[in-house]
Amino acid sequence: MTGAYRKIIEVLEGQTVSPPPVWLMRQAGRYLPEYRETRATAGSFLDLCYTPDLAVEVTLQPIRRYGFDAAILFSDILVIPDALHRNVRFVQGEGPQMDPIDAAGISALKGEGVLAHLAPVIETVRRLRRELPEETTLLGFCGAPWTVATYMIAGHGTPDQAPARLFAYRHPEAFERLLSVLAEISAEYLIAQIDAGADAVQIFDSWAGVLGEKEFEAYAVKPVARMIEIVRSERPQAKIIAFAKGAGLNLKAYRQKTRADAIGLDWSVPLSFAAELQKDGPVQGNLDPMRVVAGGKSLEDGIDAILEKLGQGPLIFNLGHGITPEANPDHVTKLIERVRGAAA
Image 1 (cartoon, rainbow, N blue to C red):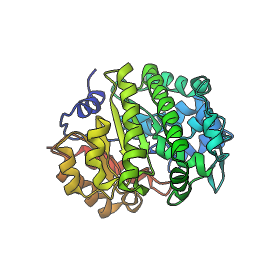
Image 2 (cartoon, rainbow, N blue to C red):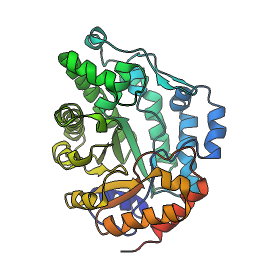
Image 3 (cartoon, rainbow, N blue to C red):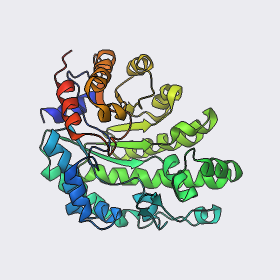
Image 4 (cartoon, rainbow, N blue to C red):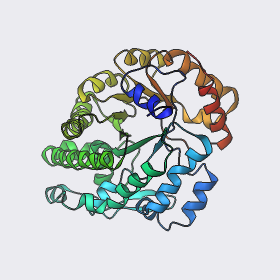
């Protein structure tokens, strides 16, 4: 294939492309009026995720509007605990909630039937690969075991994930089993996405930044390394991006030990350190999402700084986390124009 599809894959293979390919985390979402219109017809948020017609539509909306170099499957990291019968629901104004799991519940977890439950998501991937322009990379994804486990234990999101950290200290064997089960299931889920047409996949560890050094190794590095090992054992050519938000100085070892093709960088990663990380392989990121909200010179300066520091190496331009509902769609247009106007 040629064009933008090759740009993304070439970067994941370690090549430098100028200007760099660009996509944005949460590029299909509430900042777009067309998304809000579709969402209003869907019923619950999970209904939106599990209805291929609607999930395909919202995935394609930012591609039609902006022509991003990649489309990312519209779904949620919590479809895995939903498939494990944890009664996941999304409450307006409160976010995701589910039945908290305890040590006995972890012992009873079984992976049977998970992929059958997620068949609508896999069907969405299959349809997307048919409907997307040939030059557009299709990204699948899942949550990392640590981040998914934090929600399963607390039953909801918490600021510093204290419930999961405390549970891990009090019940280390049960917690290790939970991470192991999630790693195995999530790896098979990624393989199913790849088989359905995903060109690459991303693993989101949104809560990696709350962990100490030892815990980061045990809860963030080890399970993701295991996932990547499983995926590569069955699909050796799989391209994998790992995003450990807030990992900071741990990112160097994270790349080496997980063997991800590229690592995502949040906006707190200094560009000088990002350039050092880039010497070992591709990086993705890392514009502060608030710059997209602010627009103007703040947006331009942030883009230019990343391109100046990282544009001479393998880079996928992205945000340092998901785009926020407050972002102005016109600012996203300006972002793409500025990135694509850059030259090596």
